[in-house]
Length: 472
Ligand code: PLP
Image 1 (cartoon, rainbow, N blue to C red):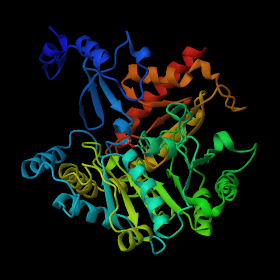
Image 2 (image 1 turned 60 degrees about the vertical axis):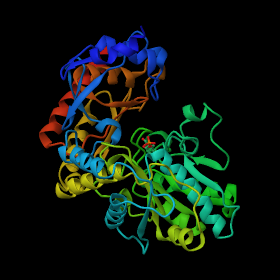
Image 3 (image 1 turned 90 degrees about the horizontal axis):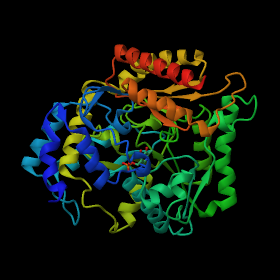
Image 4 (image 1 turned 90 degrees about the vertical axis):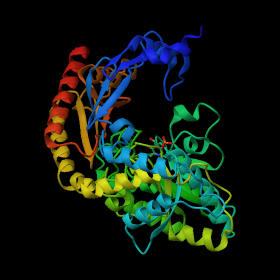
């Protein structure tokens, strides 16, 4: 008999009692994971996460783990929020699905679009009154590419096709998303990037500043790379610039304060659209509903996903500023683009419940005025650790660089995989922290208390010490 047919009932006997080996065997036999080297997994077995509450997850062996990554940067409201489950249940019983194609709509999608519009502040006269829904950040960025091209076509400038992005950016995994992204490993597979997408260097002071260059000077110079690229491509051919406010998956790269104002000056000067990919940074992560508020720039399109539902159910979308919306609506006729699950009623109902919860508990305000500054204070202490070359935070994301020599900023030989050694210690010590090369990064749930920040910092120091011991 096919073992897969009899296996499932045996896998989960009671909430706390799992047959880990059996789950891992089935996993390895059938489940192709995203971003996973299956060769490395063979014989080891994937860690099986079985339940979660607040800021903790548990694995199938009963180990309790502090999730300092909010799943994948998404569980902003923390785990176990019953009202989100209730919202999904109620909506499923009322209207589990209906589409928004062909002049049809549904109540949660309308309410959510209006709610999001009310949360996006007007900047420099630019308003966000319209929202296009998808199910993910990747789909949303594909939507951006189509929307941007459609916009310029409608304005009689079809030659404006080129979108400028940045190396080491992450904008998703679809063909357009991975092309917009600047991950060399992704470009190496599947003939990416697709045409008309080009990249500039990232505003990463640690990697790209000249010796002795201040953050402020570097920020202006890094923004200047955009202008150089526009001139190289030809200003009349450039459609848009896309960037994450703070690069997340690239390793929590926080731009100097001078970066965004100069980017704004450049996109204004050349009239190109600005896309703010806030899939990670929106919904309280940087202490505001939207991250452009923090840096004070004026995007035309905002990509969102993840935190809009706190990851409880897939939902993404694009906040469409008036500049683009007006042209699409007044001149565009039918926009031949959409997903079956655009405006999915259950996903929208969960998002509404999540945003109401975040508003009631003022999670953006907590990050801005309470736990964000406290995390910054505690993280700064890590700079004294012999392994740490730099420790930086922005709202509720943080990153630290592991270095061989603090004085000279010499990095470790990449072959040593020091970041992975540290990540292994985190796993074994009950902490989820991510390694990007030798940068260790976190993005904890926004419900974290000061006591829990202390608990997390204790674990981080323990894992740094253990990593240092391994290297001696
Ligand atoms: N954009 C950014 C900035 C992201 O961080 C991500 C995912 O991490 C995406 C887009 C892609 O989102 P998704 O994985 O929902 O497709």
